Amino acid sequence: MDKKIAIRGQMLSFSGDAFALGLADTMHHENDAVVVMQDGIIQEVGSADALWYSLGDDVKKINYGQDHLIMPGFIDSHVHYPQTQIMAAYGEQLIDWLNTYTFVAEQQFSDPSHAREVAEVFINESLRAGTTTSAVFATVHPDSVDAIFDAASERNMRMIAGKVWMDRHAPEGLLDTAQSAYDDSQALIKKWHGKGRNLYAITPRFAPTSSVEQLELAGALWQEHPSCYVQSHISESQKEIEWALSLFPDCKDYLAIYERFGLLGPRAIYGHGIWLSDDERARCAETGTGIAHCPTSNGFLGSGLFDLVQAKSQGLAVGLATDVGAGTSLSMLQTMNQAYQVAQLNGHALSAGHAFYLATRGTAEALQLADKVGSIEAGKEADVLVMDMKSTDLIDFRMGFAESFEEQLFIQMIMGDDRATAATYVAGVCVYQK
Ligand code: GUN
Ligand code: ZN
Image 1 (cartoon, helix red, strand yellow):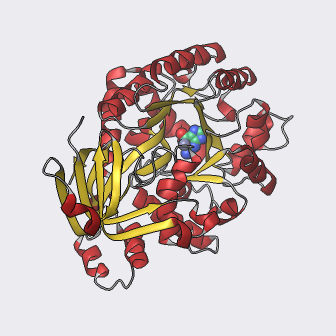
Image 2 (cartoon, protein in one colour):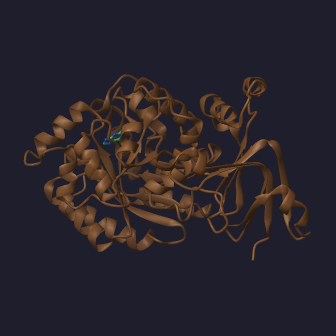
Image 3 (cartoon, helix red, strand yellow):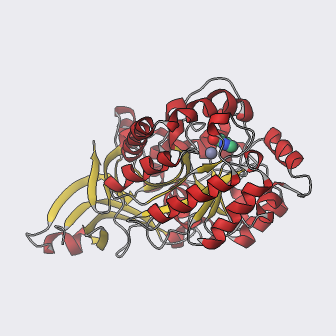
């Protein structure tokens, strides 16, 4: 048994869908709380009055104080670790950006040592930003999947990742075949899915880079391994949609392509979905298919404004995501900042409570992981972020004028970034400390 650790500070967690059920019934804030962790699990949560003074001498106690907020680690529902090296690549929109920057960079991942180096940077920077779980695209190279799962396993993180499938419309060095993608993914599932905290995602990049035969095999592989994830992209840019539909002329809309190959359902999560129709959103909701909202990426590539409120009102499972390297930050606080601005442009003011829900439990729900992570509750896995609510001089100054906890939270999501991470715990162990 590991030594018990008890941490003390303010505490924030959510017990259900803040959009569907309202914040009053789902958002839980304690001014002075204690969270007790042992063996990777949250053992006890309660008020400091009730818990702190009764803790035995065998417990390691850390009092972070009232300026610190204990909350679930952030969850990123869509990110490309190999693209860490091409963040902030100038000037292009989606298809040109892929050809000019992404497909060039991803070819370097044929070198396993390069993959390992970038995976280390990605994981360390995610933890610095307070993110404890991500759904990650590797590259077409199986070694690039080993690199990210090895880096995650060393820190005992709950990680979702998979090998990208592409058998057309990409440079020679990035092409697999329908059969090799299937065989490689089959082997990677055996090696990684359910090993430790790792979960495997079958990862066809998007419809335009896979043949009919390849998407058929992706669907078949998911049927053989239904506890795996499926991740891909959908309806990110107008040009992409036209291209996808020209390649699959029998499909009535973009979603119908993935539908045809059996790639919709719980544990399928698609990046973007900006331009989905009401009917496509309804079919996502019916099938339990998740959409990853990637606001910094959508602004950076000029892709469009995802309507979060519309999506949630149709019952869609929506996660928040950085989508690095089109995304401009690995910080979910910065991602919430951009989500707020996109919602404003859609005529809605996204509250801090809803945004923090989305970045934690909401994303866990979209990934079918809410029974394990995304909230601070006894029995859940102990992935915890301790947030410094006064992480810069300017935030400290601004906080002096905040009149409510909601306002304090809003300041964090608009002005905060990775400097707000005081400590990140993964499975009850402190893996990052400022
Ligand atoms: N669509 C297909 N591949 C990608 C990618 O790597 N990034 C983004 N933003 N969209 C994509
Ligand atoms: Zn993406």
